Length: 218
Ligand code: G3P
Image 1: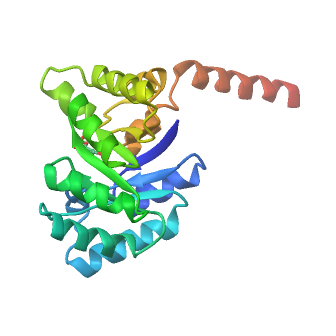
Image 2: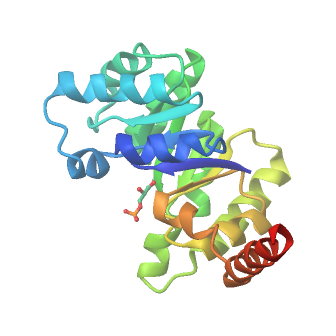
Image 3: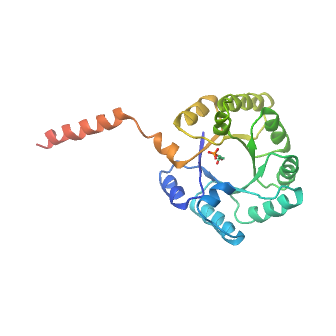
């Protein structure tokens, strides 16, 4: 399973990358706004910086909602670095754009996916990644993990090459359940990855080993 970190914060990206287990980064306009990047030039430079920091796929989202605008933006983003993945919303124009990018050899991430039907459309268009938002489904009392499982089943049935990238992950159990289902990728906030480290028995055991070693040293 690939691990992406879902943030535009360079410090968080650096910290996760230093662990040596990071396979990529996903961003979105809300995450860019959160860290206060302003102006197109600065946004593009920010993506470039992330690409130079992490050796893996970096998702950068288009803002346009019409086909021509998405193509213009997506080509500009893809030209920044070979690891850029153009993130495109799951709308009709988006599906057309994904097909266009696929034919041009540009990687894509179809975002804002909330149903199996949408997942089929994105795979048919040749999306590199599909981002079902599981936490946001949980937020409206709908089982996000069931959607991930259903999409994995359908993609397996037809051997679609699109990778299932579980997004809107909120906590360690989301990550573990996605791994059990067989999602190809999880993109998580750094805090959720951090929490995977924690176990009280690890802490107690380490304290005991260190205390006992003091006796060995004398
Ligand atoms: O990758 C999509 C993700 O950023 C959305 O997460 O927590 O805003 O639903 P959230």
